[in-house]
Length: 371
Image (cartoon, rainbow, N blue to C red):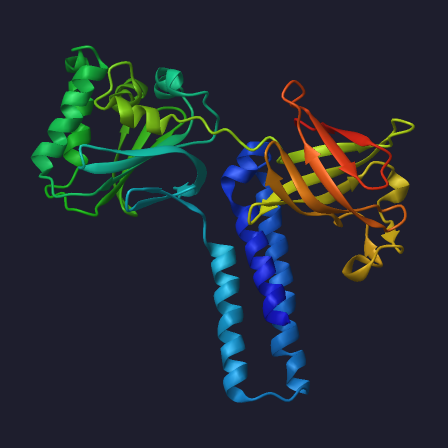
């Protein structure tokens, strides 16, 4: 039983930690709050097992096995991020650059020589934003992973040629910065090497090999030219540019929705929708009436009985079918009844979620919370 509970938490944790999920809602701080919640829940369960179970009889082999499972799930949940694969190369969907957390925007590979990823903390609309990104004075980063044997001479020539293309033949104007940057690169470049280029707002460009600092260049103009090698109007690889600037289209169902009383039109609550294993779930995040924020669902059934209304999962297990999510369960917090439900969004009303459940008196209209 305990193991099943922990693995459910683990699966939920992997969903909420997924940065694309939170990026779609533009509220990244919730992911951090949820990690803290997961840590607290898991510590409580660890305490219950390791401390309280001293009062129970257990065999040593069974105890050691359970202990291993608990530790494995705990650390993999808290300390792992989802990855995006480019061939056999993985890039973290969220990565840390000198204590700065940035999100993966896109990743690709070129000439079977290296794979690379672009990390930003703002959204782009697509490939047409390449120059805008390159010229923007805001913190961003590039990660390059060498995937085949390449000499340092060839790699430096790729950079130099790319800078010549990026500046329309005027790279000589940046010759001092180019030489300084190329001199930061090691004399030998090996397969599986990882290089990170971090640009910090204000003009500071920092180069790392793995976690080792190779050096810095202070020049906004050089940063613009360097990033235009891959993002500019004349990139060295058009497909790579498209991959790096691929705009992310979130599932429109995901996000926060404000619910309303169908008869009076008065707002009731804010419900957060999320996905676990391709099924949609919805949790009451906030009751709109202040007097109801400490309410208890005395009429609810099973595990939901006597639980706080805020935090209650009122939608469970909706499965995709065509343009709808169906065959789910909806808990009515007024009377505790559980009914079959379905939800969908009409093409011409992207900010309205249609919710229908048995006994609900027709279709309910929930409104998207954009901020």
